[in-house]
Length: 151
Image (tube, rainbow, N blue to C red; front, side, top):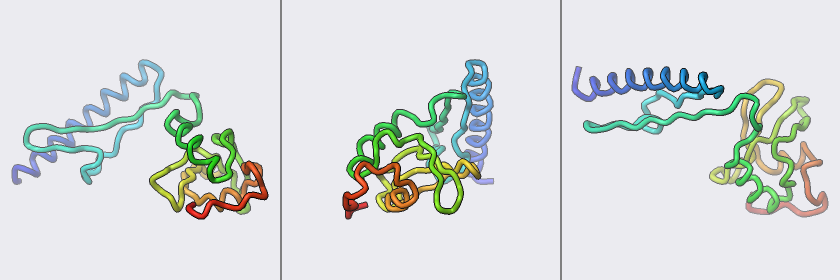
């Protein structure tokens, strides 16, 4: 094996051990642990000959359905797109018969900025604002307002 492959295996081993340790600590304090991906696309683990970096996320079981970051993004962008600020975290039934929960706004995804969780299947989705307007008319601030042409 070459030197880079050896380092990659060492980083994978360290990543597994760090995840195991963090999971034990999180359980001890009543948190749910969500390890970062162990894929080597250099987004979740970065390394070179001298150092490495890894990321992890956690959440409180039974805590709020959305994080502060999502609340902030939603409150900034949704009203400008004729969606109520207090619609975040709300469930609605779409035309396909499935129930969805609005969980956030992704400003980096202008075509599909609304982040949804399908309560029926448990899968997460990104949707255009127009789809939410069509399937959840209760989310609209003013039903007669014309849509924003940018979203």
